[in-house]
Length: 242
Image (cartoon, rainbow, N blue to C red; front, side, top):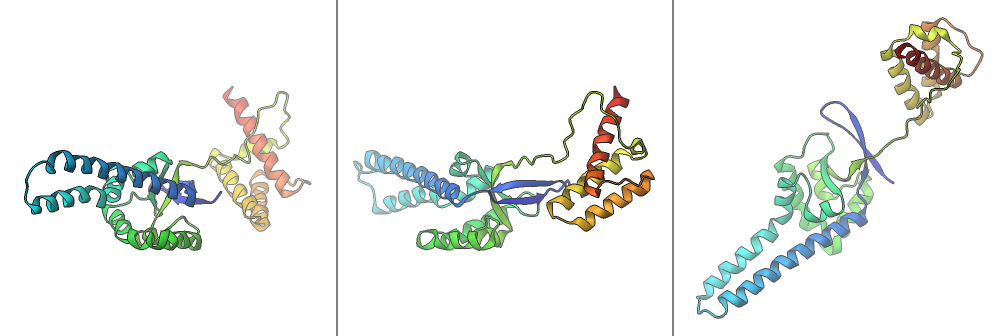
C-alpha cells in the first residue's frame, strides 16, 4: 500500500493511501458508462423528436453540439462542483487533492482537464507511466497542477506507544513528574520518528535530555528507558486525575 503525507493548512500532517491504477481505471470506466448513458438518451431524443419532423440540417448540427458539450466538460465540472470527484471517483472512494494541503483551485482542475487527452493517449500508457515514475499517484495533469488522487479515508496508523493502565503498577521513575504534558508529547513524537527512521542518534539525544531534566541515571537502554518513562507518566497522570 503506497501512501502520501499531506500537511494541511492547520499544520496537521495526514497520511492517505494513494489511489491505485486499478481504482482509477475503474473510475474512468464508470464515467465512460455515464457518458454512454447520456448519448443514448440524446439519441432517443433525436429519433423521437427530430427525426419525424422536417427540420433544417443546421438544427441537427446544433443538437449534436449541445449533446457533446456536457460530456466534453463532464470531468471538469464534476471535479469543480463535487470536491475533486466525478461519479466514477465517488463510486471508488477516490478524489483529487492538492499536495500543498490546500483545496485545489478551478485553475488546478482546469489544468488537469486540459492535459487529460495526452494522459489517455494510446490507452492511457502516458498516464500509467507517469504514475509509476512519480510515485505519488500523479498522472501528467496532476504533475502540472500539483495534485494527486488518493483514497478518501486517511490511513489509521497504529500508536506505537499506546499504554494500557495496569492495576498495582509500580512507577519506576517518580521523577517523571518533573515532565509536563508538552514535554511528554514531544518525547512521544520524536521517539516515534527515531524508531520509524531507525535514527539511534536522535533516540539517544531524547533519552539524554529526559535524564537531564529528571536527574536520573538508569542502567537500562535508552529505548527501554523512554518507553518506561512514557508508561510511568501515563500511570502517574491517570492516578492524579482519578
